[in-house]
Length: 167
Image 1 (cartoon, rainbow, N blue to C red):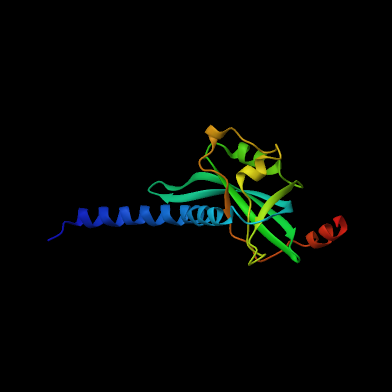
Image 2: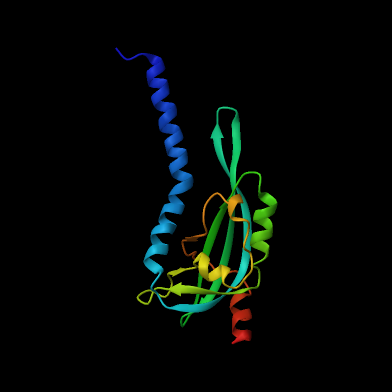
């Protein structure tokens, strides 16, 4: 017969795996999309929305912060107004760095790779974003490299008018 402690250990390990997978699944998907998008043509985009959100994990002692997710939301035309976002994960003690990194891109123009078969899919590569010379944080302080996040389905109010005024 299986000892109750063995069953408990299995459940704890399974819970840890599910929690880890839930947090880092997004980054695996982003990596896969980034690899696919390397050869897509580039187009100019504007970073209009930035945010930093704490990423938490439920543990034995309660909820704890495992890092800060900085997200850049950008807009581009191809030919219709499209939107995408990219994310970077920072260490739990680097909230200020995450805020500064994200804020450095607000209002900036960046080059994004756009899927020629589906203009709503795009990738913002770290090489493209850093080539502008902005937002480059100390590499040793980052948990993971810049990654492409999935495209969102909403456009903040006023963004379309702002892009129309610029064209």
